Image (cartoon, rainbow, N blue to C red; front, top):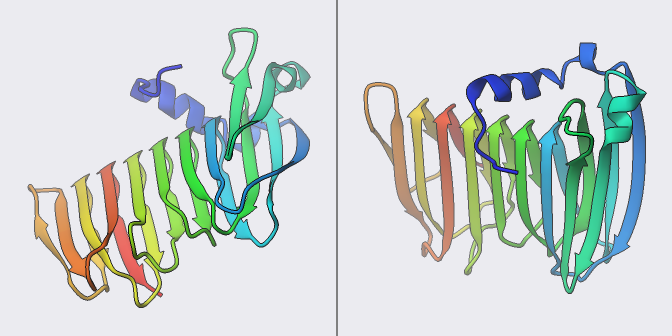
Length: 228
């Protein structure tokens, strides 16, 4: 399925998060063994995704399917598969419908890397030390990446929605951020911002040695980079 959807379709999907679409819901729970540095991929269509790191060598998935009626719930399936050290979690829709949605609460090994794609819904992650790539079309991204150093990469992109990233003191990274329509705020030493156009901002800088990479991009939405 293409990740590029018209604005009207995005708004319709985002509306699925509203309580008027959540007359019925169903929880699905699955745990799968995973390597300490597993690559965890999540692909969702509508609904929030929250990921936290933990000390166990497993990926624990609690998915709440919601919709207008039981027929919508039956059309949604949660596909979980493992290929080598990679774990793939995918929301699938049957019967030609994309109604309803799924909210995820996922625990992953603390050393895992993340690749999350969410069409309409927020993404929130914390407690992982691997590379992270997050993309949303309509939804906020809230992240605590801990210490960002070495060859680590943090890449957060939102089409419509704000990005808030917290990093730990002692991080070393090169920062590149742009907001086409929105502000960029930072309290991290070494990061400077400039006006990109009348309504947008660009930020860049070097933290410590600049060894890791932090990329933050929004089309419509503010960006905040904080040191916790």
